[in-house]
Amino acid sequence: MATPPYRGRFAPTPSGPLHFGSLLAAMASYLDARANGGEWLVRIEDVDPPRIVPGAADRILHTLELYGFQWHGPVMYQSRRGVAYRAALAELSRLGLVYRCVCSRKALLENARRGVDGLVYPGVCRALNLETRQAALRFRVPAGRVIFADAIQGRVACDLATECGDFVLQRADGVYGYQLAVVVDDAEQGISHIMRGADLLTSTPRQIALQQALGLPSIRYAHLPVALDRHGDKLSKQTLATAIDDRQPLPALKMAARFLGLAPPVDLAGLDEFWHWAVAAWPSRLVRPLRGYRQPLVILDIKMVANG
Image 1 (spheres, rainbow, N blue to C red):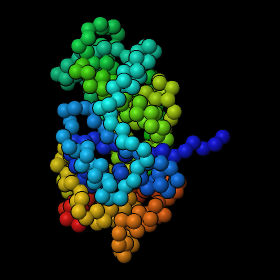
Image 2: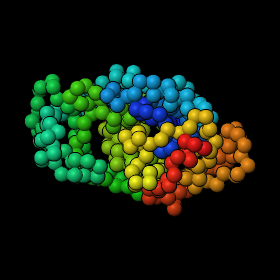
Image 3: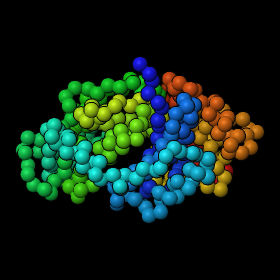
């Protein structure tokens, strides 16, 4: 059987400019696609309007261009994908895998226990067959464990029912859930490999369950170590991570390469030279090349990314 073509992607949320953690995910996914002779796509995950900063999407794309990233095809925007999400919801409803939920945040805090990355929904509305329109739509997670092999983290198993609970596919205000949007978009774009931060590792079993329910192709995953600041917090827009410097991309690219286990020569002089070297240095078949980096690492001085 022929091996399907490699298609990777980078999918930032435009809630602010790119920071060093974003650069790590972009670089690793880009290098893995290029080293395997594959395609690399960009998707703007702007499905949640309250999180979007005006102008951030354009700035992200501009920064990627200045850093020498080249993507295949047009950029996909989740904010324009409502028809596809509605169709997926309709199919899941037809299969009996969706139900309405009116539980408030306060009720969850009082009744739910904590799971792998948040509260485990206790199933209050699961058997009520509610008809009210002002309700969230939840996915009936399957019984048993979802198991997959991560190229960096190794074997991962999660019992969705006990560790995550039924999760939201569409909020009561009509906004589609992250898990649904990602699964539908990955299938639409023909994504075969996903390389992203380990902070999203717990989302993967949920996405696999949705893929299986919708009859979509499976994807190979690799979850990178997460860059932390000096306080031990994950670099993110929420923690006010410093934006990478658009004026001096090479120092940040070299630092990201070192974080990923590569050793860039000191005499690399320009972007074209850097990317040519980096693609050649990246292992063409990723089988846990970052073995020594399974745990999150601390970036001791993030200022050097911004100041070159």
